Amino acid sequence: MARMLSLLGCGEEAACLSFDRLQRMAPAAHDALAAVARDERVHDALLRGLLARLPPAGPNSRALVAMRSVHKGLGQGDPGLQCAGIAALDSAVCTLLSGMLRRGTHLPWHGPLRAVLRKIRDDEARHVAVTQAIALRNGETNKLRAAAAQLRHDLVVALTLAGNDFEALGIDPDRTLAAIAGLPTGLLRS
Picture 1 (cartoon, rainbow, N blue to C red):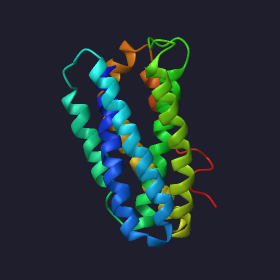
Picture 2: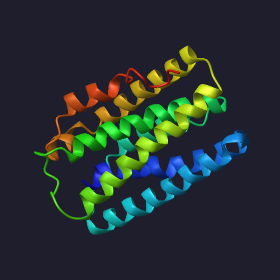
Picture 3: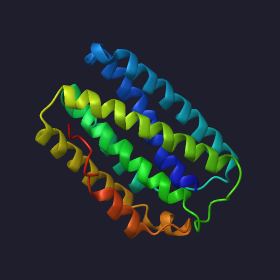
């Protein structure tokens, strides 16, 4: 669990920086992006709190490096393309967290872990709506979907390196990664 939370945590930290940067690049969406940035800072603090309660686990260095590369790629392109990538990433995080919260996993059913993961999932779903709207106002649908599809591909490559961690938590990595690999039908369509 500590390794999976570390992967999620590196995403929250990167998201804070992305949304701070996007506020300057897309001033018309400043308030919406600032609200998302505040949520991401809360998520980062919540994940750090959970990690502090867990026994330390050696990091999955290859997965962390790959995940950081995915997040670094989000900072490239115009605001529309960046928001398309963020919408794709955040919707994938929702899928991942839903899989982690499913009955039958090895996560404790009660307690702070599930509550934090549910809060993050629910907030990320809202963030998808915000970033998708900004992307659609600032880009061509085909280009946005292509960028989002590439991000999903890169994310699956990174998460594949954490396959053993999925299995240890009672999560089917093949099923989860297949769900993350494809773009949802309505994502980035006006």
